[in-house]
Structures are given as structure tokens and as C-alpha cells.
Length: 446
Image (tube, rainbow, N blue to C red; front, side, top):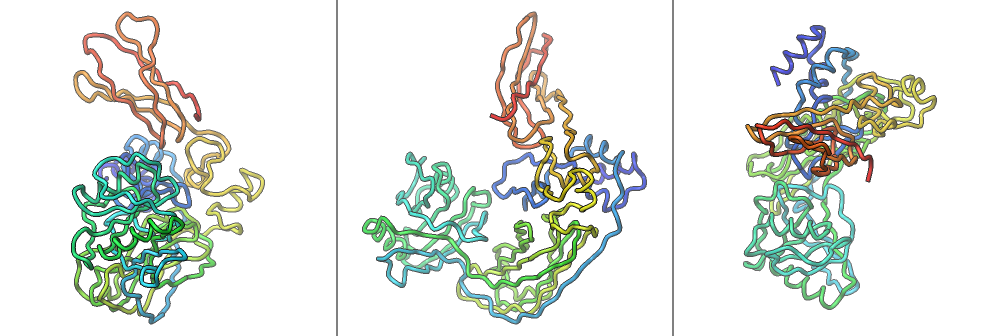
């Protein structure tokens, strides 16, 4: 990254550190599949593992050469001292049905190390799948999967359920009537899952057989605080200072939800057994280029039982550049009226279908109703007989890969690729002794 910063400054020495950071974001792309990846309220893909992705040095230099320097940074801060208890054992499996006994209506659970139900899941019918050691043949769309621990890893069980269409998984223990454990090796599981005791699981399975109308939901009992923000800015960094007294701070999950609905995980379940967090500052970049005005929600959840704590104080600081934004979409009203003639567009939308959100077009000062998509392909040698074809793509479009080698006169269709981002690629074996020609054809949306 430092080398890329040097390249950017080489073509535009007037860049500030904020400019360079935003260039890195604008030129980045996601190259690894990660279920945590979401598009934020400005249309920029982000996950908690690699942020906005891997920057493209060529695109960064191109953007830097015509970059418009950012306006001065403004910081708005908001403080509160709620002094409230953090509910113990906040992970709860909700069970509803006319035959459900009271002790099974709100079951204490543990969780995975990956995706969490920061918002409650849908209340769904459940399918008892037993131990699950192989792919699930039935369609679980619109359902949750009830699975027993054992034989296969947690990660494989959850993946099999996700492949079958399940929205979430409940895994119950196969030993020790009351034990709850954290499900290790589940950092990249594609759907949320809870773990419950053998006693609760065995009783639920029998209840499911008697009552097919039974429904379940993954939820969290958290302490929540709301900040109402009236300042119109294009968001950059966000900082949250948390002052809490909890006897095992690693049990706490701390999240921040923006007015756009984007959730940042500031702290996840871990093994830190110290008290606190005492006046800890958490920062997130997940909300870059979103609008700041509206409701910001802080949620703190105790994800393990038996330890208690108190939330004493919070301080939220929003950093960004002020704009006029009466419709609170992250687009400056004068810019929006100039290009659209009204205020009906949104920052998340891609009005010209060129793969760039309106918020990105505003950042780069390009026209949001005129496509800036440059359809070009690069040949990248991987070894002496293998090439990678890479081209600028439009998300969702299907591309046909054509090839012509040797003395052939008619190109052959080598395959098709449906793009999921701004770049697509194809790997191909070649004969280094022959000439080869390749063409990419955009077939549009399927």
C-alpha cells in the first residue's frame, strides 16, 4: 500500500493523506468470497476481514491523475452516560407454537465465530436433519435446519444447510446435557448458527415431531443506545468510545448501525478475560461515503452466560465533509440537481448502469447518467502454458469468452462468466508454440 501511495503522489503531489486513503478505497475490489461482504449505503463493497478489498495500482494511478482534493475534514461528536445493565446470556433461540412449554420459549445459546444475527432472523419452520455428515438432498428454502453435533465439523454442517437453502442453523449437543460451546472453525460460515444444549435440543426435536407448526428465530438480547444526528456530511471515519464495566470483556459483541442500515462489528466474541472495555476507542471505515444524518444505533450483547456488566458511557464521533442534503441520501443537493434535475436519486443507485454507484460518481466527479465503463481486457501470464484473462465488467452481466488458436478461422466459445463485481477473469491453458487470440463478448444481463 505504501508503494501505491508513492505512485499516486508521483502523478499528483498535491494529494493529502485523506485523498490517498480515498483513492485506495475507490480503486479497491473484492477478490475473495466472504459472506460478510456487503455494499454499504454508498454502494462500496466492504467486509470486516479485508475492508474494501485489494487496491488496483493501475486504476489508482489513473484516478489520482484527475483527483479532486477533498474539502476540509469536520468532526461531530455526541456523548451520553446511560448507566444501564448489559443483559447476561444475550444469545437467545426464540421458539413459538401453541404446544411450546415456557422453559423452551427463550433458550440460552452460544454461537459461531462468523456471521451473527445482529438483527433477528425470520421466524421460520424447522427441518430436523439429524447429524448431517453429507449434502442435504431436500430443499430447505424458507426454513431453518435443526442439526445434531457429531462426526462432521460445525463448518461442514452449516455449509450443507446453507447449500440446501436454509436461512439459519440450530446445532444441539450430542454429549453433556447442559454444556454450551463456542463453535470453532466457523469464521466464514455463510449463514448464522446457534448452539444449544443436548437437553434443550432433544426436547425440541421431539416437540417438532408433534407440532409441525412450531417456529424458531435466532435473536439477541442487547443493550441499545440511539444517537440522533442532524448534521449532513459525507461520512469518512467513525469512532465510538465505550466505557463499560464487565467482568469478562471478551464476551461482549459491540456493533454500530448507521442510518443507511450498515452494521459495523467493533468487537466480536473473544477470549479476553480482563474487565472493561474501559474508555476504549473503536474505529470503523465501513461507513465511508454514507450520509451521516439520521439514527445511529449502538448495540452491546453479552454472548456468554454467567458474567455481568454495566454500560456507563458512550461517545460517538463522525468525521466527514459537510454537504447540503435535505433528502439525506449522501448526495450533495446542488450536484444532484445539476445532474438529475431533482432530488429523487440515491447514493446507492447506479443510474447509468456502469458499475459505479451515484455516490462513487460524486466522489470521482463523473457524470452519473453517462456510462464511464471502459471495456478492456488484459492478458496476465501465470506460467509458460497458462494465462489469466481479466477485464472490466459490469456486476450481473454475462460474458462470453471466445478463443482462436493456430490456423483456425472460426473463434470458439470457451465458456461464460457472470460477473459479480467490477472485474471478471478466466483462466486458460495455452500452447506457447502457437499464436492465440481471445475476445470477450458482453451478453448483458441474463
